[in-house]
Length: 251
Image 1 (tube, rainbow, N blue to C red):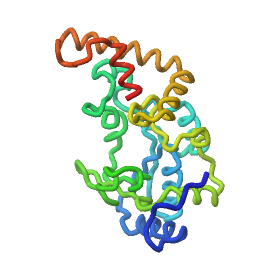
Image 2 (cartoon, rainbow, N blue to C red):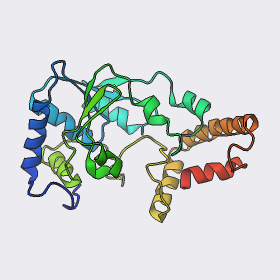
Image 3 (cartoon, rainbow, N blue to C red):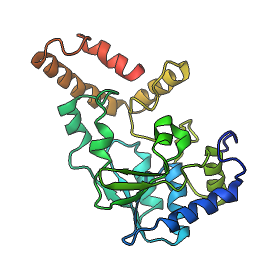
Image 4 (cartoon, one colour):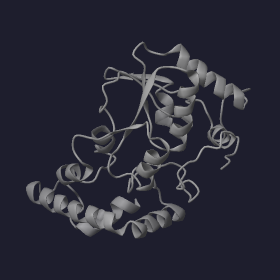
């Protein structure tokens, strides 16, 4: 897959991005080594290979949320057997029953399922500034709550990521060829947010493909909604669950 050359650092060619990333990893290598977060997506595939090529000390782990697209854990187990699976203390379904569906104002999912489940203080992730304003604002080295995150491909445009994958003949999840730009959790309400017709169609296709997952999600969400409405009357402006649930997925 090729992406248009519309982002990146002025004057940088493909090889410049590669050498810059390797130099960055070597320069910042901690004595104890890095923890490399691996998601199975295109950015983490490139990042893990760059870490390996740089010769730095590291261990790699996959935060297994239990709600990733089924293809992802299968892909990692088959092609990246050395990547350790890290599981959260509580399952998504248990947290959903307690907290309700994660929303923009109460976005508990990433913090509870992905972050803080490894003992390493120096972490490497395939985060790129191009992905969002919030990610760009945090910089290439980011320290938060005692942990420092290093981002070797922070300045990489998408086209460079795909060129790296193509030149090295790396396999990647077929979800990209099916139309996904980014791979996150199954049913993430933020992944396809927006009012565009294309996003609405994609969401409906996802709901059809993973009927059982959405059936369970709806059942647990309804239980939470009704329990919360009873315990805290007037907390939510929407009184009807079906209206709430439809707006949640197709906002």
